[in-house]
Structures are given as C-alpha cells and as structure tokens.
Length: 493
Image (cartoon, rainbow, N blue to C red; front, side, top):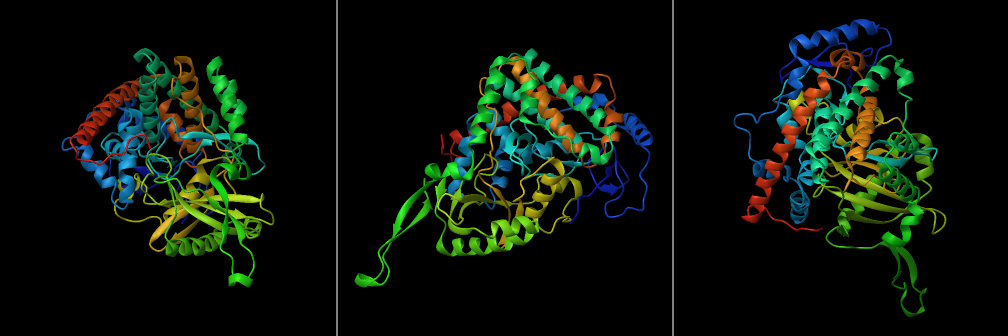
C-alpha cells in the first residue's frame, strides 16, 4: 500500500475518483516529469469556473438526510456495547463534544457539497482540538495534527470545512459573540491560504521539513492567557513520559509463592491499575493474543527501533478508553519493562477501521489491505516528524496501529478561551493543516484555486456559521433521543 498522490474528482460533484497528475510525480516512478508549478497553479485558477469560491459557503441538509440517531447507531456497530453509553454521554455533554464524535456524519454531509476534486492526503477529522504537542525522536517538543484514525486521500475542502465549523462551535461554547467566531474563522482560512501559497513555492523536499516547535504557538499570539496556557501545556507535556506515568497508572503487586511451603517466596511485579469502566483487564485469551500481536508489530518498525524495543519485556496490558469518537473501539495500553524497574515504555494499541472518508472517495473498493498500516503511513505523510515506534498489527480479524502512549503529549485547553486567543489558535491550526496538505499533493492547484483575495475566507465563514447551527440542532436531536430512552447514556465518565 502506498500513498496515492494527485487524485482528481470531477469538479463540483461527489462521485467517482479518477487518477490525474497533480502536485508531484506519480508514486513509484522517477521517470515522469510533473507539470510545471505555474501550470498547476493555472489549473487551480481554472477550477473556479467549475466550482466558484462562493460555493464554499454552501450548506443545506440534503433531501433524505438520515436522522442523527440512525447515524450514531450505525457508528456504534462493532463497538463494545458496554462502552456505548459512555460514548453517548460524551457526545450529549455539548455541541462540541457531539461534533468531535461525528466525523462520519459530517463526511456524509460534506459529500453532498461542491468540491474541486483535488485530493491530497487529508486528516479526515481536523476539528480544532485535533492539534497537540508531542516529543520528536530527538525529544524536542513539537506541535502538529495528532489524530489520524480517519486520514485518507480526500477533498482538501473537507478538512478546512471541519476546522472552521469546529472553531465556530468552540467559540460559541466559550461564550464568544458571533462576530468573534467569524473573526476567528476568517483568520484561520487566511492563515491556511497564505501558508499554502508559501509552501507551494518551495521544493517538495524543502516543504517536507517544515515543522512547528512549541515556541511557534506562543509567538503566534499576544494574548496573555493563551501564552500562559501554552506554557502550562508545554510544561505538563515534558513531564508526560513513561517513567513518570508509573505512580499514576500502575501498582506493585505480589504474585503467589511457587512450589508450596518449601518453595520460593512471593515475587513482585508491576500491574496497570484497573478503573472500570475506563480501564479494565482483558480476558486471559485476549491478553495472550495481544502479546502475540505485539511481537508481530515489531516487524513493522524500522530495524533500529525494533531492536531497541526488543530489549523490553511485556509485563501487563489493559483496555483503556480514549477520546470521544474512539470510545467503544478496542484500545489497549501495554506496559513494557527493560532491565530495571524504572526503565519502562507504555505502548497503545488502537483499533483501526475503515476511514469515514473512504466510502465517498472510492466506494466499496478497498484501497488498504490493513487499516492500521493506513493510519501509520498517512500520519507519517501529514506530520513533519512522527513517533518512531509507530507500527501496526492484527488480533484475530481486528486491525490495530501501535504507538507510544506517553510521548510528551499535551494539548491546549479550549474551555473558556477568549476571542483573540481563539483567533490566534485557529490560525496556527490552519497553518498546520496547510503544511500537512502541502506535504502530499495538490498544493499548487489549491493555492491557485484559493488565490490571494479574501473570497474563500468570506465564503467559509458563512459555511462555518451555518454548520455550527446544524451541529447545535443535531446535538439537540441527540439529547432528545437520549431523554426519550432511544439511546443509552452514562454521563460524566
């Protein structure tokens, strides 16, 4: 499986994807010369005739749009039934929580809207909270997109639409005025447009090295409260390492003595602390299968990192609930111990299913034999630097990707964010999105389409407000369904 580059869909219409040359040479060949950048930019400008930038403002529910309850219930298929009430509880908590949990619903909505047909690798779930801090292989603290469960080649507009809609919803949740929400959205689109233009002028290899340190976020705002929050998040992230997680997530327990009265005394081992329903112990058979799967996962790593991790021993594994959209899917935390008790690594195995983008890009035809591998490869495509322990494995019929669980990860808290802070933060998120898109394909065409005016900014601000209204209406429908007993719920978990 490779990363597909340069897909074009028929402009303005959802439907079949056809292959075409876009921003880079066809994958797998160094003998084909791409179109000159000026020609690709002109192609992007030409797309305005087929899909005017004013259509970026479009939003109205399609005729026959499925009910919220139906779509949520469909998303619950294949999940652990005992965790479905937890997922519903997190979604009914707020419109923003609902938006986070309904990437599939939004993908189905966006598939009805006009699109240029330029399809780089997209995040597929690019809400404003899907940006975070993490440690690079050199242990620098970097900022980038941080959730790739839905990553897939797809319309670039979908990522940008989801970002601006979530910005407006988050702004309303923080009590900001409609003017402040619009200002933040327009700033985000402008930041995306300008950074994409900048990157499109760079050589492909040069733009692949563009990275954002944590200082970039602090420098992007003059808002004192946001600067303080960035400093706080960075300080916490630097302490979120495997060794520092031991007191919080584990305990030392005695195992029974072996050999009866004359045998050895009890041995002591470290175990992950169980906290139902969020942290639970897997069945013995499942634990054995997961252990075998972790051995197989080593074969998906670069040889050096496979050798390094091979120096550790698996000592415990537990199921741990994460996120909103992922609640109910299988997600495990594995504790590995090195040559001493404080030399530890936490790994996370997370179930990977088909991207919500995929059905609207290539229908029922499978492009990816292994969904965990898809997540890993597209994460590496979108991020400038990725976790060196990213890999994939299979347990029975389920596919997983594997990554470090404690890797200096952190995030900026958006609760109570101010108007200026939201504007600045949304702008940084948009630049990261532009960077990710430019690393794969289509940057010159997207830049040509957007141009240098504020027409796209204005149009996407109108869309964001309309879709924020839709999100609030959908959230209200979900709350009503829960209150009438149509969906199970467990709140505050």
